[in-house]
Length: 99
Image 1 (cartoon, one colour):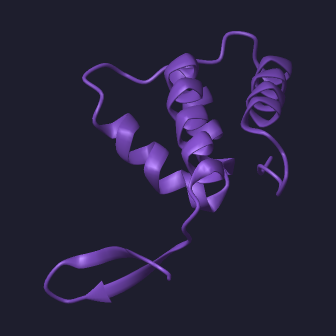
Image 2 (cartoon, one colour):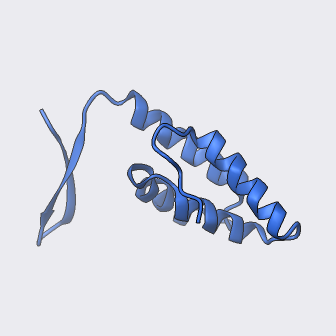
Image 3 (tube, one colour):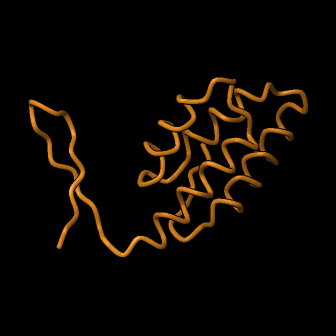
């Protein structure tokens, strides 16, 4: 399985997955391509992208994935604060900034 590598841009990862999918099956269904894209996405982006894709009314396409993931990558890169997760039994996971 292809995984997005540290330092690998989302666009490079996206292009690699699309090329690999076309090599295996030129008629691969779009939802399967989106599944492969999600599976190998960097951990720090994965949950945010999956959440937005699930909120869509339509079945996600690779183009939708690319737009959402690029937006999330840009936010991740430009956000000056680091975040960590605190688990609480009342709320589940709460994200809080590290000072």
